[in-house]
Length: 225
Image (tube, rainbow, N blue to C red; front, side, top):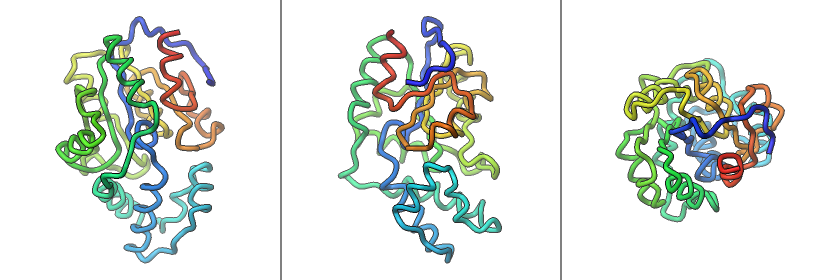
């Protein structure tokens, strides 16, 4: 655990989770959709090893021609939701953590960067038997997508807070990528960064989250300590 600031969880009512890389595994699905999208845009493909190295360095966007950047990202994020199979699983231990949090009375919400309908997101969560844990589930809307922040979530966070009538000071954003932290901080939330997607800790530290953890399984140690 890499704690940078203390969070008083006695004041926290809501925990907002990212999905991919936070609750369900990221890399296999991400690589398949990314390489498929590279092919669709007639861009050079990349190997698995190169992909994993770029994830760690947060340099994957360098594989995209800048003139195609926004169109590429919208295609990728839209198709990501369609690319799953009944064999997909959640990160081991994640469900048990969600159970603990619900039993302690926290409200839970989900804000994913995927571009999809809410119904599609709910259906996938039903497959994982996770849908009942979350009071609000919000995918990214195509009209909210903007270049310069790969998966901005400010509008989703705002929607969740208003829907549950909870103030930013009473909420925490948990995610595995820099945009989760940036969006949470921009909206006045406390932030917990996870290293489960293998983005380097040095890159995550630059975003100055309140807490950095190895994975969702370390969350109870911070909350219930």
